[in-house]
Image (cartoon, rainbow, N blue to C red; front, side):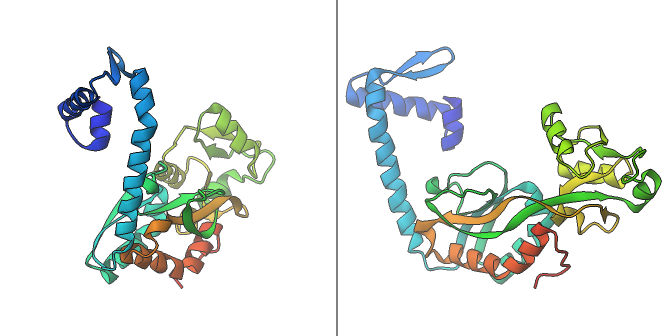
Length: 278
């Protein structure tokens, strides 16, 4: 009940009243109340696909109405991974806001797959090789990573030397860590610590704890780092939105703005160093 209320942004008592009213209207129980939650009754199971179809139709109409919006004003929700927002996209997002002061940009930094069909976001930037078929999109490049370290650490520990004492900055659980270390340019190196947060990995590298396998769009912009390997591609980077919103002025303006800077973004994510958007 509380999870449903949170998702719908109402109180759990409101949810309870609405369920009671629905069951009264149908003169039947739709849910079995249990100590650990609600279960659908046979009547509830029969009603579920009808309710889902009604919701889908309503959302489709809502998207089409919004798709006819020609005003460069109002809310625009963009979702993208936190590290992408922090290390690459922030200046571009601020520039977009300056160019379109009447558009109320809301940025959700998340790896969660927001449901664009349900309008949880208007535009998404995602790392994927298989974007959903029902979305329109433009590939911005191929996300790549490489090995980086400080010159002092590299000189002292000589990672290319067979007797090196260099270590990786660790991240991921044991099995995942073994896989990425084994596939890395230095599979023989041990790891130190576990830093699943990218900014912490960067700070650990700056502190001279080890070398790191990090995104090129991060490592190439940190003056204290040297690159020790060629970029290794991992997945595509896609700009995505729902087809029904393609003619919405706000969505169209944002897509156009990002696509015009695609060469810069492609170079950054793939490991070609640019210092300014081209």
